[in-house]
Length: 124
Image (cartoon, rainbow, N blue to C red; front, side, top):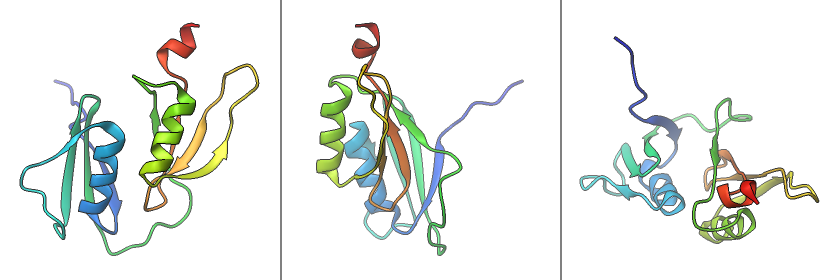
């Protein structure tokens, strides 16, 4: 018998607030019973589920694990602009003149994630 990843769990200072941000990023939904102030919140999206858990510790240092996003309906540059409008912060721009590369952003609690090229950009 094997295991499967049920969801990726992210420690944070405000589970509902961070889950709401990621629901917007992933066009996902929060669980019906998730409310502001809850110690846990789950986002379900087409790409899988993320569980956010409120912990007393502040984020310290670089993430050991991060998400790499591949835009589905937009190109990479438009997706980066959409995520910045949601409250993400630009950390580093690794885009190259030939169109390859990625952009590193941070969510509203400082957790880094990357935005890669869309499938259409990779094919073209």
